[in-house]
Image (cartoon, rainbow, N blue to C red; front, side, top):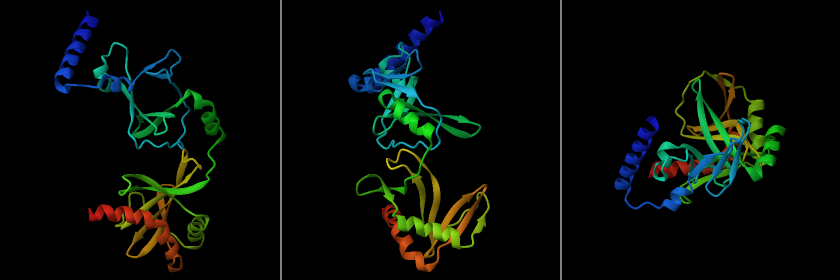
Length: 248
């Protein structure tokens, strides 16, 4: 009886979707549909399978294109896939699927890797993340996309010099300051697939600052005037991006 009620309910919902949506590209909807195999893998409409990866905080693929995949049971009508299925974001290169769960107010990301890339990516995760470049990301309004800025070795050395030679102030947890511009820097792998936080660079009243996390507090270093030109070059892309938004 419960099964009959469930089927009737789904049919009613399907009829509503047809009346509201009008003409729908079913082929396009089908490409977003996925199922779970007996092994626990996610299987797309075309047979491509994705395998669950172990947890890895450093894993940071790109999802700017916003393509979604929905895992739904077979009895769910195609038009109800996005509302009755579990959503996964697909990385821009199609290699990873991402979802998340919330545990004790903390977000834990879950990744599935395309089967043909699973072994190589698993090896990198197990072997540990080796930083290769230092970058930050911001939005390029002319290109209408996110872009990255990679620091030169001289620029990285300048940041390290500030942290090694300047006496820091300690900012308590949740302290706020009225920064004019801000860029968060990350250590990344060469392909940008793995990353971890480095420092933040901020500009306020023509003075640059380096902010470095330290436990529950933050260390705030003032950049000496002799390095202003170097830090201005680092921040140029971020300031250009923020200024475009302010003018708009």
